[in-house]
Image (cartoon, rainbow, N blue to C red; front, side, top):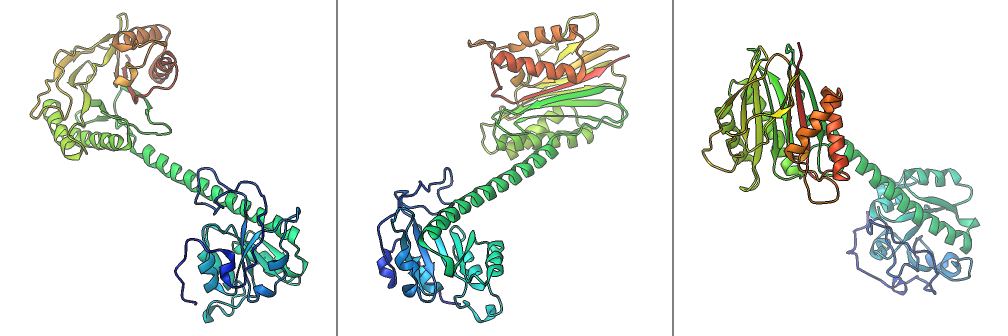
Length: 434
């Protein structure tokens, strides 16, 4: 294989020794939006440059007669072998015309009829390539396209008009193929990210519980499935149902990852028997070790519902109080007088556990502040907790329950906001019926 020669930035065609320079042909702009490096383009967008690779380019009629339909020549560079071709293959070359009869670049490739083409494709993966062959060897030309060339041409049937048209087609096809490949790669990455994020969302462990569980989740990040909000629910062997919802400040992927870590830590600690202040203190240690910045904090609401379902313990770490709805009574917020600090704000903080009587039949809604911080109309007014309570009372009076209630609540909050919410939204609903 020839020893590569260091590539130069720009080489006028007359410097190649066999090049025939002519006036420029006016063609459509060759710039590809969003991917300037996908296919080489000329500086002005009006001149095509062809690199002709064959063993006797000086004797080729193409070097002298390559013209478009208007009689204007296309700039041509010529190379007798792949070593010269690599030196002349600069960013202003748009298309390569390769004679498939050119000598093989190495002894090991002697039996491969397309070895020279494969070498050029490795050498110039971003360039359009036209294969040149004899009219009696159409099968070889078709195989060249299957290997990676944009098209093939017959040497003895070629004229300037046909080649000019073929060059334009090859350049555009290469650009289209590159854009399609990048689009496919982007879709694949998006699918992988969606599968990953979907796998990080919780699957509540409530087997054996009489409680019904529903949730609604909408991340604030565009086209994301996971934000900084997180939630979970598990039932421990003693029959207690534990549920929580939290919110890491911020909306990016780092916050989403920290939220997942806190959720997994909460589940592990809960299943290990921790509860109340001990649980929240340990979670704060996890956050302090895992956060990327000391200013990052997280709010959290935890509830542990007794096995008989009639009472619960409540822990708040800078988080809005849950909403409790019971038959014959207006929905109301649970007490939040003993709301402790958000996790990560105060070293050695304390989070009292409050006892709450639920009754025989109830619905308990946990939510993040994304549900209450949306705007109401075009002004600066926010929905707030009072607005949310009024909204939920009305929706309950309309007979909405479970997942339908949560869907209606999030939809109405978005509608009041006049469009998509900028903050993450997570809502969890636990129901007990008799």
